[in-house]
Length: 77
Image (cartoon, rainbow, N blue to C red; front, side):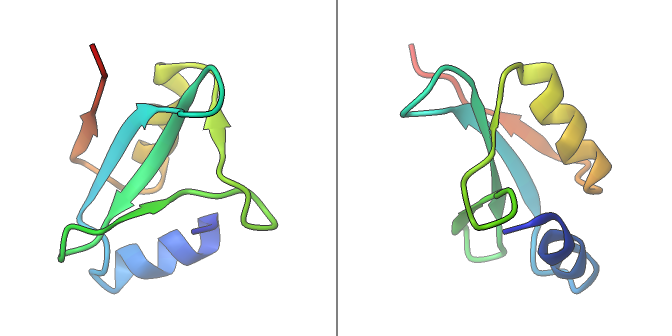
């Protein structure tokens, strides 16, 4: 979901949580947006490409700017 789509979905109550997780294919973090059914939708840049953040701080900052109060960080050990 791109920025404008996320903002519309947040206002409509269609997204309940943000999850920051390690990117699978690169060194960084991805932002996943959770709907009420528990489905995780990736935050994307223009063109539908999954946005990869270089730092955990930047990923959580963007989630807060999108209006998420609940941000879960998932790490694989």
